[in-house]
Image (tube, rainbow, N blue to C red; front, side, top):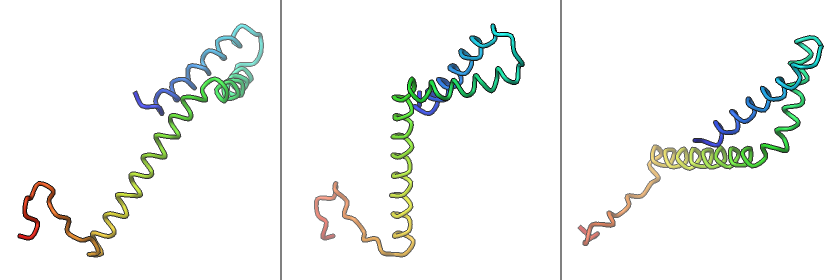
Length: 94
């Protein structure tokens, strides 16, 4: 399971748990939703730190891969890439 999915499900679950706790209090439904959103955001900052860091790391790695691939394609399209020798070829002079 990807870290982004884990973190998202954790945030939703935390929101639902806080909302369920607030449901017992007699107040306006809109106010309950707003308080649940605020409290779950604050709690997720502390409780879901590990998952958030994992997600940020995955996103940084993906961005680095895209940047590397973009640079490789740019050099290939510009004709600046040098043909690499085949490592399984015993005689690269052919």
